Length: 302
Ligand SMILES: C[S@@+](CC[C@H](N)C(=O)[O-])C[C@H]1O[C@@H](n2cnc3c(N)ncnc32)[C@H](O)[C@@H]1O
Image 1 (tube, helix red, strand yellow):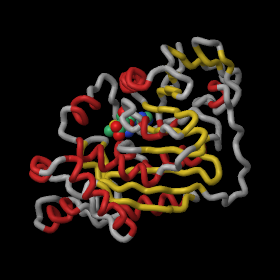
Image 2 (tube, protein in one colour; image 1 turned 30 degrees about the vertical axis):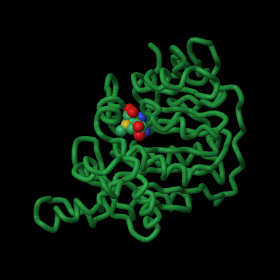
Image 3 (cartoon, rainbow, N blue to C red; image 1 turned 90 degrees about the horizontal axis):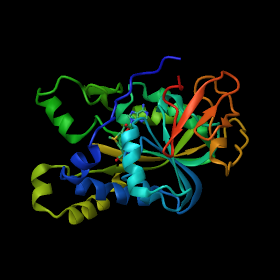
């Protein structure tokens, strides 16, 4: 199966350079406010897609178990260093376009700052939909092409692409901004209903960030976030969507045993055998490595 290219963060110091030393305290705090407004207080099994170094994971503490999925093992290793090796966290290296999970298992999922690397967003969203159980909550953050800055630049003739059209724009290789209506359409086609929309990062301006303390700016952002219900012109938008039960689907089984969560991403065989240092698929004979607490489904073992 061919899948779109992956924006590779292997070896990247993203968490440090972008968040810790990059002057992004305001954005981080504003996102925390939005997440708190959308997250269920508790739950069983959460899937964090494009988890990176686990910046947001402690915000999901009400869930019994959290599966952190990322393509980059270096990001997952940083997440392990931060969160530890307890049975609450499961670390999975895999491609969002080829999720290695059995259907209908998760009662919640989040995807923050990861859709914007998806060249085929509907394909990624379909994968996510498949692993969510009926009534599950999906919290999606996306980069918004219809933001004030892009509209202004377009109207002044300083930007070629239109922020008003529905197709995604690739502003840097494998970095995409999306139109809010396109996101709503895709989610609707997959049977999600949207329960809440919050606009985030209203004040992402260098000068403001330099003169107003991050905590205050984020609190102000929090006041404006609910206007996302009516219009969305910020660079970042959070959507809380819920899986409907359109096709009278049954619930998936809840698996206490971690290896039982998985399916083979190559042949979709659902009974992987636990060989301790790898998982074996008896259907297609592929083996998937388990190294230092990371289940690796990117490429089968040689
Ligand atoms: C901008 S970072 C965001 C990390 C984290 N969600 C945060 O907000 O701090 C995007 C993450 O998505 C991951 N990613 C990109 N494409 C992916 C794919 N196809 N499958 C899995 N992870 C992917 C990258 O490895 C990276 O860690």
